[in-house]
Length: 280
Length: 214
Image 1 (spheres, rainbow over the protein chains, first blue to last red):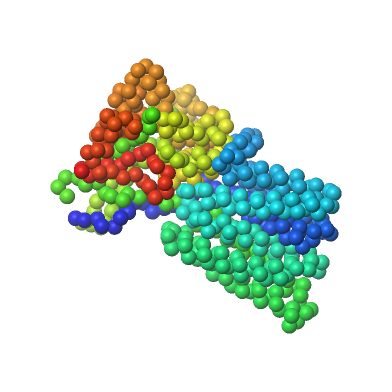
Image 2 (cartoon, rainbow over the protein chains, first blue to last red):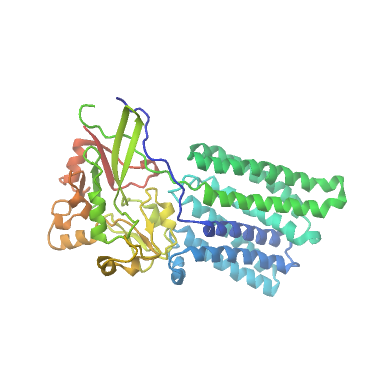
């Protein structure tokens, strides 16, 4: 009897180490960072301090959620110890910089601190992406194409959130940036999807394919349509922009939740050869 | 240099789980935590069915992804290749658990007993340091170190050899120094065809599976 297929082993199963609290860190951290970046770029004078504080609060909420998940909560400061190789440590240091610069920017209303906070926020969302790609045990995470996807998703979420929060005081430039960022996110999503999804466990594929459909129609096509709708009918500007912003935000959050909770199957165990016993 | 590795002969393993039981006894792991597991795999369809029993656990990789991601430096690697966890530093973030491609790491937040209440042995051997932190197979590092201090040879002398290897009733498990050309491990690897799990991930695991003679 010959066993020609190269790999044998049990089917992968969903990881249970990181639950919704960990997912919240990526969801809130990305959206908060994106909001800080968008706010710093398009409202450099700091006319909407509540928007700025919302960005900081979201990052804090994500970190608080992940703090609730760790086993030894009183030792949380140990997270700062491995700058040499751990992206989780780097994320923690960068988060400290985001809060220091962000609070100074809010207190002093100084553009230089806003710029520094925005750069730190960009580094924060990048660190979050690298946290995922360093997790070699989860095939859906360890792909490097995830890095630009997570970063652009954070930016789209931030722009969407700014459209939602600023309402009729939306700064000039936010809408065009949002219109540009939406298809860019779709491009990075497609690059990731094409490379990774066919290699995953069936249920992980199903989870990401469902997100993909939603991402195309509700996360890209519909918001873009809503953003250009006011050209035809200007009275619809505010509701159209707010709905588009909500859709951009919600689909980004949904993607990250699916990635961390639903597509996070390990690769199981695999045997390239079966044992040969007796007279086989 | 020394590089401690383990060899599992898949032709010999009968899936009796004695290694699992001895590991649990030697290391006092709680219910649900098996640092040395034996997977029972079945392939094909009747009547062309084949079965394999596969011992798994921490592979003590040369390039361990768990150590790279650990934010606290609790996970470290000794010069002899053993990957260790400092329970006093670990915060139980479980990042190492999702980084490990071998599902070798556990985190128990509460004591777990075989019955509703702890039996005396479980009470005596409960280690509060291990609650809320990552744990995994250590290759019985204490036995190795104590054995070496007494001039014994790990993999040859039972007192210096991991408990699972000592307990294996079919001699499917072996332990030794990969860097010693004369070691029992290198003899086995020279005489047999072998593979390592998930080699494509470049973790250089220290766990070899024999599957056929050369």
